[in-house]
Image (cartoon, rainbow, N blue to C red; front, side):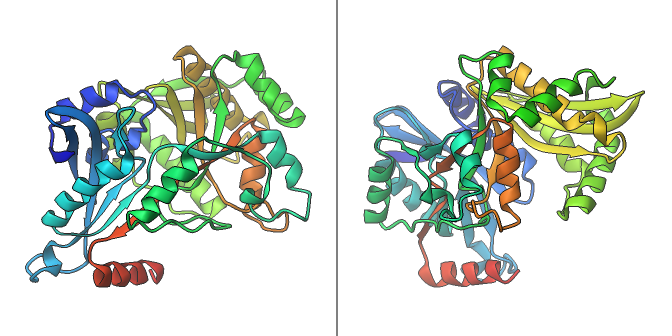
Length: 373
């Protein structure tokens, strides 16, 4: 295996052959994440392109003129690299690490694509009232063949495994909620929901709400809804310019779509959501809502709209984002898992994000710095 830089067209053409690849590996995503430096890297067997990775670089918080440290960076590959069938991950990572080391990487962090374990929505929901369970990995599950062996290979090659936490770790969440769509119609998806969620979702279609699609010209309304949601739920929102880049950059990709939905009541926005699609996966990464007209369940209508869009596009699942590792009903954060499973979402455990410390001293110092921020 050898690795070298490839251009956006080569990278996009390769991903077009891999409909399971995440939008986080789309080369256009680097144009959204402007606080990182992005590069497309190809993995070759002879002259054949058999893998690709979008590598994001985050320099150390020191001036660039400082010897050694000024050029050092964290190399981050989220949900990648993407590989052709039959290409061993460790074989691809070895020359990739060497390339990044030569460029100044002190730590390489990768989130290998794939699922390790899957829990059915009903299994998780029922566990939330059982005191014998505290974390998802305590529950009965389906283990993906070969997944644990892959992790053994990574450890043997010097990669450091992520810790299974009750909460969230930095980066992409290890546990994710996904509503299955493949081979289902809308009624089939609704049947997976809890009785209460199904009833409220159906009722949302009769609550005099209108769903419209919008562009960058209506991001001011998104910003207002996001600010209200952020204050209510205690998180930090993103600036309007970020979502403009999402629409223009990722939405402008040949292999991805971005739809900005707004739910209105009598012409006034009461909820909004972004819908991403790449290959056979669709995503609900960002949503916001107002307390006004709350009983009309506008967020549920938007999610139903996304389910319908995903089915029409032939998507295999709708990704609702991460959940914590906890299933302890006394832990406040478990409420997020409960809510998403009532929507019919299965929970999957990904491989998480693995570290390869190229410079152990710098990697340790960087990890300590990040933990104290």
